[in-house]
Image (cartoon, rainbow over all chains, first blue to last red; front, side):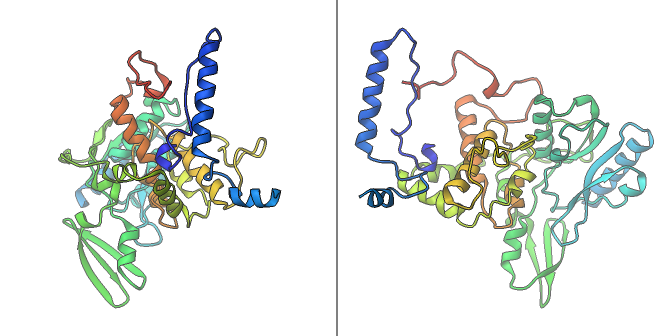
Length: 57
Length: 315
């Protein structure tokens, strides 16, 4: 995915056991934080983000 | 080349006469120059139309999938590696096959040659590493080494890895070849540039699926792009759909692709389809020390697990 031009942090992998609730929460928070920092995904969407936004507004 | 074809014909005739195989898969001249086509010879008469030259780039392993009869097959280095892949994926049995190995010095790039001339090429002949191209108003001789398909120029498995008969002495393998220069160039780009590179690459794609059809790895009874229930991917030429197709097809070939170049050769729009598969080929080599189709004993990295497998991407 990275090779094709998807930003390195947009896709993340993790292995969490059902007993590791703390790790789960941490990972979800961490992922949300990095994705928010990256902003909305512009690639691999059929309608460009700007267009959707202007239609809603 | 002449001694090659005579030997291919001799071995094929013997195999058919001794009833060791039901048919031989080889090449015959196509209707256009530089376009040899597969030929399925069931009797000694058919064998007479067999040819061997630098236009035999089609991967014949593609015609073995799920066959039930006994088959003799003419195989270059890359075909032989795809035959191995077919065997380990249970698409054909080793004992159904008699492999006629052909040491190969590369196939010529018909698109590169066509682009060199303004009008139609009517005749292409070769002799001792020289290619003579003729057409209306031109007659030019080229060095074969300069017009090789890109994947042939960087090939390091020119000799068949598996065979029952060999038509000539093995050729010298190329050494010190930089196989991944193009992949590294893309790896060094920023995400935006990478995205743009592949966008530009696929701009002309017409979704004809010739790359898939020519590929010996693409043997699924129903390809994911043809499926309607569920429909995994849009069927239009929307750039997102086109990219999804190429990208997923490449993933399906991970650890299996032998870089035979059949996809590029088949593309009517001249798209370098290998740009997708090659990254995965490089990763398999660097992470798992794996090159597809070299041995029928070893299982490919995607269907085995080893404790030492790289897992740095999992957080």
